[in-house]
Image 1 (spheres, helix red, strand yellow):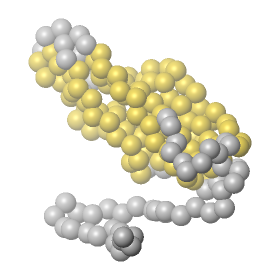
Image 2: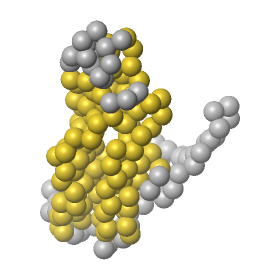
Image 3: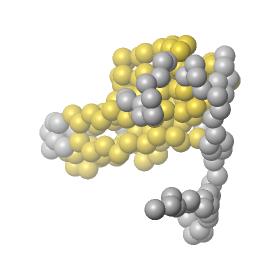
Length: 170
């Protein structure tokens, strides 16, 4: 996953927190999210954390599997993938996100949701190749950004952030 920066920067304190190649699958259609595995990570200092995994859908002959995967950070959804699989075809999509997190212990829950169409049975939704790594920029002097989340009812409108852009002089 490339990181776009203004200049070349050295990474410091690189740590592979989790590297799990196991496949965690949901084979029964449950129309809600099901936690397949939870990975706990403890950071001793503020770090940039990379979370990456493969979202995998698999259909069977005569039936189609539909589903999605997502990642929760301490119960808050941070990354979602929608995946569709045709008959006997596995579709895999790599999903990744980077987060700036303060020192603490975090729980990353990897969830799946699966439903099926047809009479084939045996469709599955999976999470595999889970990687969580952390690093720091040694020349970082400050960080700013969103420090929380909010819930908004479906029938309401909410403004979460208002910015006044500065137009450069021509």
